[in-house]
Image (cartoon, rainbow, N blue to C red; front, side, top):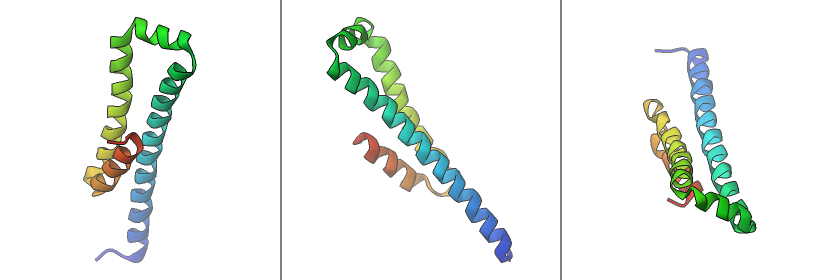
Length: 93
């Protein structure tokens, strides 16, 4: 059986990994939100984004998908469901 110090160290490691995953989800969300807010606020930005809409749809979709991928990277640590749920809540999935 593992001693208390080993269990505490493992818990700290898992907690740090979970925190990193959540930080990445939040960063992806704010990128996504900022691009959409800028397009709503400025007709010029909206027109620039629409000039290459295919690229921007892929780019923004990739950012969103990356946050969901990040949230599932915890699967080997047993946190997949909670992280995926958090990622889904952030993006309203």
